[in-house]
Length: 247
Image 1 (cartoon, helix red, strand yellow):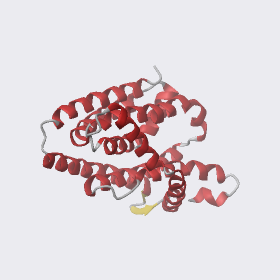
Image 2 (image 1 turned 90 degrees about the horizontal axis):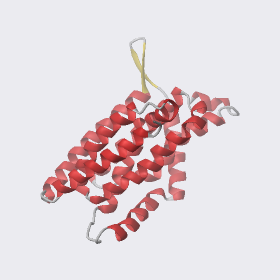
Image 3 (image 1 turned 30 degrees about the vertical axis):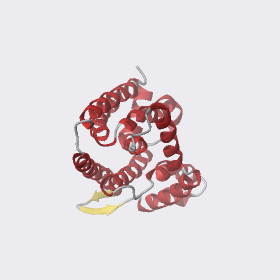
């Protein structure tokens, strides 16, 4: 069944968030803070691992870098586009709009929970590759594995940030479900190398999320989201400007 992975992912996030909400009611603030910092450290190493695997290559026993300029250009152009669209503010505004309608208004971390968890659950390699595999082959295995990880993360996020994590389900449905439905149309243009480049940039953004989790909001990761799709733009432009294919 195509789309099963995304459906299960949403269910595990809902279940994990529910467990986290119950835990939150009995946790002092200092416990919430240290849990969030611990999750931030885990997120940090997940991001570093994905970025390093995409940027470093080993040939004949020597380590070298690859796609460095692609990463830099993607981040710069993605930042310009994201800042122009002000994606982060729009996410915050949507979270605030939902907060006023679905909560009593005293949940100060509702928006933060929605934005932080949405970014973490959707910018990783597993979201892109898993959604493509589910949409093309009806194989949800990657997304099912991701569902378990997201469910555990949802418990921790909800225990620290509250009910806003529930809203992440909408983000997963739109982003991950959208890729699954469009997989048959976009897969012919997405080579394994291109998917790897997108995943690498996504891992760098995950590292940025970890900084916000540990030190408080320092980076507008939402405004960097277009960077993930810049390798696709460079791929098409390389047909007319061959030098872009060497980035």
